[in-house]
Length: 132
Ligand SMILES: Cc1cc2nc3c(=O)[nH]c(=O)nc-3n(C[C@H](O)[C@H](O)[C@H](O)COP(=O)(O)O)c2cc1C
Image (cartoon, rainbow, N blue to C red; front, side):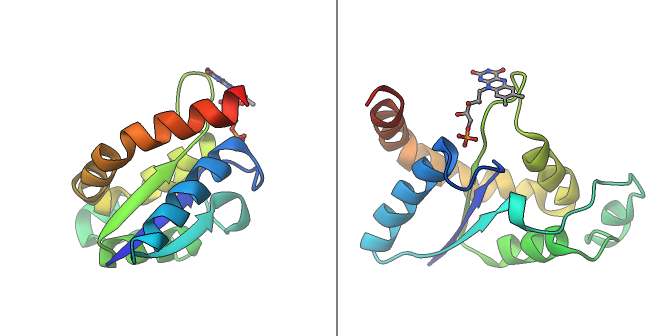
């Protein structure tokens, strides 16, 4: 089983990354293979609204965002971690979601079970990170 973990914060050493690395360690202990991506480190254009994804099922811009979408589509699960910016996801995470529109059904289908399993763990561990 392979799970893709994505940090939507520019801050590689930030709280989002710390929470995601804790989940990654937990998954690895359980024998689950993981791949970790920091969106601040990849090359990703904004969605241009060309609607190629609607027509072909793939984004027309061939950069790292499209590569990650393809990796997510092949994986068994995906965990998206993002800081809250103005009561929303970060700009980086929004770009990935827009750019991965052709696989956005998978974000829900593949992510929801993992979120369900990890919600309590994330809550507990975020409390440790925030109040330690
Ligand atoms: C531009 C900006 C907007 C933010 N907006 C919110 C917000 O609306 N609500 C909130 O609870 N925190 C907000 N925050 C705080 C971040 O979500 C918080 O610091 C987060 O833990 C940062 O994650 P990181 O350490 O992984 O970068 C904002 C921070 C920034 C920089």
